[in-house]
Length: 298
Image 1 (spheres, rainbow, N blue to C red):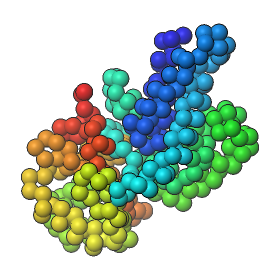
Image 2 (spheres, helix red, strand yellow; image 1 turned 45 degrees about the vertical axis):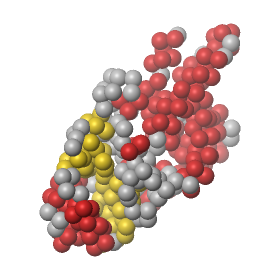
Image 3 (cartoon, helix red, strand yellow; image 1 turned 135 degrees about the vertical axis):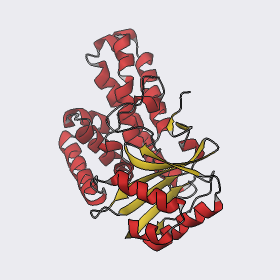
Image 4 (tube, helix red, strand yellow; image 1 turned 90 degrees about the vertical axis):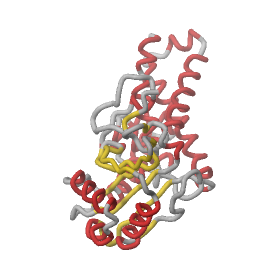
C-alpha cells in the first residue's frame, strides 16, 4: 500500500496547484496530507478502503484553510499577486523527477487566464469547482472536504462556473503567431505596431512582489501598455526575449546573461488581439525557470 500512497503524489500536486496557484504552497499542502496519513495509527490506516480518496480529501481541506488565510496575506503583498507561471507544453507533465513542477499536467485548467479567474472565487467555490469540474470528483466526496451537503457543493460549483463563463477568455487560435509579432514589435520598440496588436481596452498586470521592479497597478489601454513595454526595452539593454510556452500556452520569457527575469502570459480577445498580459517578475516565482525557460534540472 505504501507504494500506492506515494504514487498518489502527482495527482495531489495537480489538485493543490489548481486550488492554490502556488507551487510552494501546493507542495506544502500535499506534504501536510502525507504527514497526517503517516500519523494515523496502523489500525486506522488499515480501515481506510481508498487511501487516495482520503489523501485528496485531506489535501482539499488543507488547501481550503490556506485559501482562507491567503486573502489577508495577499492584501499585504506588494503590488498585484499572480499565480506561479509554469514552463512546458500543454497535455504533458514536464518530466519524471520529484520536483513538484515536473508533476504537473498542463491543460486548459492551468492557463494563466483560467487561474486568474479561479482567484476571484470564494475558497469554497474554488474547491467545489476544481474538484468537480476539473477532476470529476462526485459532490458526495466534495461534501466531505467542505463539510457541506452535496447539494450545497453543487450550488457552489455552479456559481464558480458562472464566474469562469463571464471571466475567462476562450482559448484563441493563432496565439503563437500573435505572441511572435508582439515579441518582434517589442524588440523593435515599435509602439505603433504594439498598439495594433493590442485590444484598445487591454490590461497588463505585473507581479514583482516587492522583489523586482514592476508596475504596482495594472496598466490599462493599448497605448499606455505599448509605451510601457517600449520603455522597458529602452531601459534593459542586453535583455533577450524568447518564445516559450507558459502554463501550456504561447508566451514570452525575458532573460539576461542566461537568467530568467520575466515570464509573460497572454490572453487574446475574440478578434485575435491581445486583451490581457500577465507579467511575473517575482524571482521566488521563477525558480522553476532556468536557462532558456526550460524547467530547472535541480
